[in-house]
Image (tube, rainbow, N blue to C red; front, top):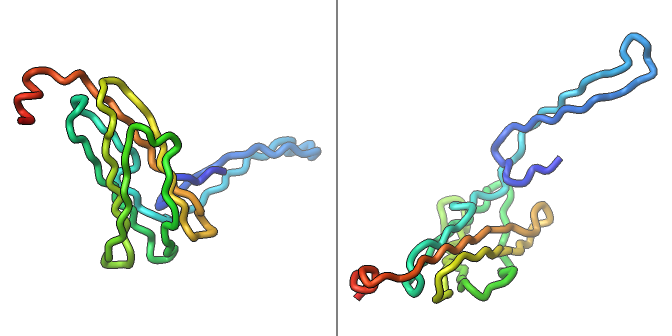
Length: 148
């Protein structure tokens, strides 16, 4: 059972058990359980939208749960050609909080997708992923004037 992104929720899975018992040839099993929250990532997906050439940024906050502390030891992007990113560590009320600044660096209109991977020192969850979507429209004369 995949519990990714299910932290803090109760999940349920059903299974059918086939037996050689004539009175009960099939039994339906229901398994229910709570999934501990490991981390809060806000927002979970980043959308960089705007006019090509404009400064477009987004900040992601990564907060480890007190019960499962971890450090981020490495950060990388699957492609990385259209985005720039920077990670900083801040002190939060319950321990370290990470701030990930993601910036568009593409200058022409179009769409793109990338995935940022954060490697942790945790054996429970050694990798975290953040999806990044870029959607750049053609810059108009009106947009150019607004940014001057």
